[in-house]
Length: 96
Image (cartoon, rainbow, N blue to C red):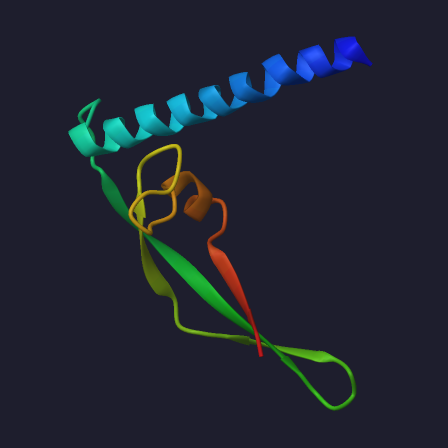
């Protein structure tokens, strides 16, 4: 049990430090624009509405597409999602 506690005492702060370092480097990369790149992109996201009916079934209705602004980084910044996440989720389902 002592060995497990010793490993935990070293592992948890190390992981927290690593996460903070990754976030800080990603933040500086966006803030200082290193490497030179477009900081933001605009990606089309399709809207799909799921409307339940009285027979316990779901009617699907396609909505107008929305242009979503995203940040080209590893993590989200400034209230924007990372572009690699938005590109993987271009169909948004709205449940009504």
